Length: 89
Image (cartoon, rainbow, N blue to C red; front, side):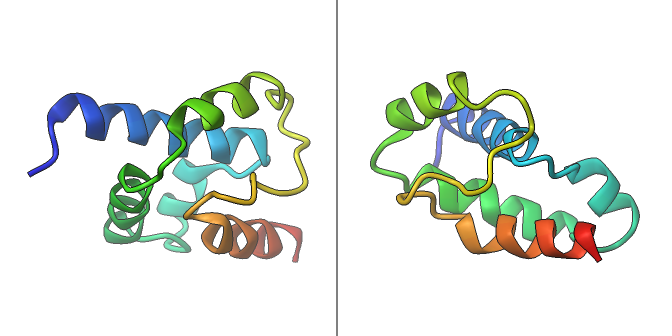
């Protein structure tokens, strides 16, 4: 079982990655584009990342909401691509 601290850390990473990409997770949830279960799955997927420290560093340098892509190692890259594409339509 994952510890609360680990899940909390990775929930923050998912939220900050979305922000860096200009993706509004709350709006996507409210519009039904993203389900709570999908968001939970994204956080759990993130907990398996071998490089959360690298992600922290990447996020420090991409905090303007204008990043085009996630880092190569992001386990949720496809989800973020899909959410960005929907927001642009």
